[in-house]
Length: 189
Image (cartoon, rainbow, N blue to C red; front, side):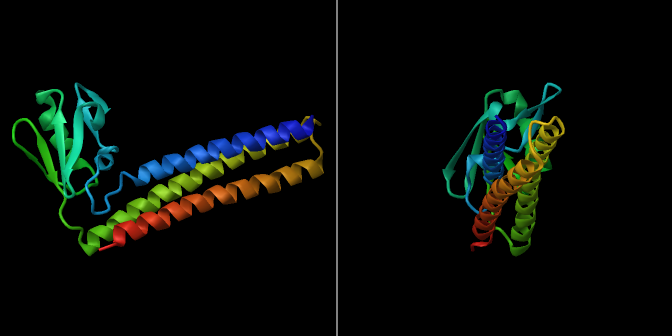
């Protein structure tokens, strides 16, 4: 009975940690690395009729060229709000508007801007590590409650905590590998 509970908790922890790692990888896609991809604008929220709405819900975003993003709003009245949101974001891009389409030309990244992008990527990675550790903390708390309720012995709790630490280390390592890959991508000239 106790083994089933422990294995269920560890399985749940592994699944939740994997989701956190995937979310972190998705966040990495929003960090500019020299190529134009629509996912660069995933973190941009636009104030639209008093509510902050993700840009991808207000416009069609495409990358017609390697250094160009094209944003075609569904509502032409939102163009000014979209331009303001892009200017206020940490992307460092200046939109140009021809009345129907907003174009973002991605300039070559300077060494200083590359370092800034690496800092953004490192912060995303640290947030991902914190999410994984928070899951570990929650599961550890569940294990202690099982021990306090008498459903789990002290040795079983220590074994489960060691297994949980291995799962945690594996997922933190995945976040670190994703960060290393993103840093290499950003610093590639």
